[in-house]
Amino acid sequence: MYFVRCTFIFITIFCQGFSYADVSHLPEISQTKKEELRRSVIEIANKHKLVGLQISLNHESGKLLTIEHGLASIEDGKHIDQSSLFRVGSISKTIAAIAIMQLVESKQLSLYTPVKNIIPEILIDNPWSETFPITVVHLLEHTAGFDDIHFREYGVDGSTMSTKEALDFLPDTRTARYQPGQFMSYTNIGPTIAAYLIERISGLSYEDYVQQHIFKPLEIKHASFHLSPKINTALVSGYIANKDESTLVAYQHIKDRASGALNTSAAELSKIQRMLLGYIKKGSANIITKQSIQKMSTTETTLAAKEGYQIGYGKYLITELIDDIEWIGHSGEMIGYQSEMWHSKGRELGFVVLTNSSGNKAKDGVQEIKQALKSFIVNNFEAENSKELVHGFSGKEIINYEEIIGSYRPFTSRLSRLAFFEVLESFSSVFVENEQLKLKTPHSIYTLNPVGGNVFRTQSTEGHNIDIIFAKESSVWYYQVPALMVNAVNTSSLTKPLSFTLLIAFFSTTLIIAVTLAVQLFRRLTNKSVVKVSSLKWYMLSPLCLVAVIICLGSAGSSGMPLLVLGQVTVQSVGVTVGLILFLCSSIAAHYHYWFFDKPKLIQWRKYIHLGHVTLHAVINLSMMMTLFWLDFIFVAFWY
Image 1 (cartoon, rainbow, N blue to C red):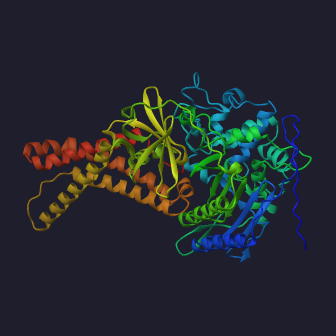
Image 2 (tube, rainbow, N blue to C red; image 1 turned 90 degrees about the vertical axis):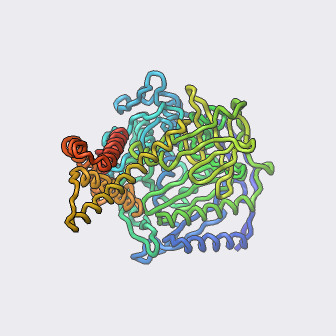
Image 3 (cartoon, one colour; image 1 turned 60 degrees about the horizontal axis):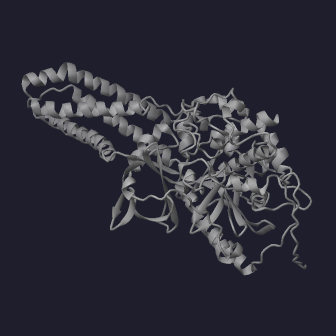
């Protein structure tokens, strides 16, 4: 069998905004290097106990290498092959962005049109609607200010729901918590709104639009957002990788299909990637222009972008800057599945990784495979013009570091009800030491080196460059870390100690009360007199209820599918709700006994030692109650 390598001349013809081109030749890579990569990837997969794996290494002209490894089903012993289908999770969002850009190119839609002007029937609560309306571009860049979908939405069966019914299910998530167009906060509700926009403008269902205008032109024949009998036959089973075994999980019929429901193969997803790389089949038009693809990978609306830093989360397409190399793509995860789709800008090479394993151990394995593929591309292929295409930065220079020095706390969170816990573990501070600007986080201290404008660069613990951008808005300093989706706001230096003091004092006084109760029990057993303080047992019960809540949350987290566990009626989800209600009831009972029985009696008996620590606990308990009320966490029912 003979292989003939042909070189074609690119012919570019401009017609109605589309480009036409012949296929270029595939870059050369030795079979030895291919086999080395294959062995390395399989070794990583086996080490991390990935059940199955499908990989495609792609150039705009075609595939350089494919890898199929492992099992499609442990129970049946069926092996992965090129026709095996996987759930690709959030890579589905990139498809929604492509569809939106098609409508923009055909002048049927503008990225900067307020969403309420197009679909007024979809209610959106935006306190800034008059001056800062939520626009289409805010949906695509996750800067609308929405919460992520709530736990209950993960457990609902959306198999028969329309896009409109999915939006009507729990409209509370469509509330802007921050001024739109400033902070990137990842949410799965935005793509569903975008899908409904597409339906209203095109007159087709979202799935039909994608089939006709994206999948059919790219000859993608087996991808689907639904679980049809045909798809079910080819779909691999999903597993959660535990320490010693993998647990089979059921198929999730998620309601927000545009956000993560796509079922496809690495071979078919590679056609999307090759289109993003610039491949155009001879004699046909690309489904979107190069200008639209560039716009998809560019961030416009964050504070960092307005400072001139446009790397990060674009329009459902991410640009990562790692060691001065731009990687463009998206990741995805569903319960039982993980996916990666990335390409190197300047080398025009990329990869798709799909696996039917999820969980922490499996995630480590996928990240190691991802890094191996990136290294292979960088080490074996030269970038265009022998250099990477790196964004420049333009912004106002920070003249005086004193402006940004101080304490910072997280400003955004994916779920508002969990914001308090995120704040507790994510305080940071900016300071100057030995004439070097530094950032201290709970994990480490990082040196911030100026890059240009308000952009500073440091290194992660893995040795990769991380960019931090400072921006001033309404006289307040923020910093954003696009690579980590972090937004932090300058805050009082007392915020952190006060938050931790409240927790420490709460559990410390609880310990004192526990010791007091133990002493009282001992005195009763030895027939000695005891000062009866009826509120003590209630003050002891209330923190135990919070401990039960923490245990339930921890159990859900260790299950490998916490969102699904907490979003349905389970021991963990109901345990959280019951624990919080019991905390509230026991706290009220404790305060009632304290004020009406114990305090007058202890003052009269002059038992000031007992009065002192019980009063202290009363104050702290009341502070904790008020904090949970303020966070809207006291009556939380993730499953309701």
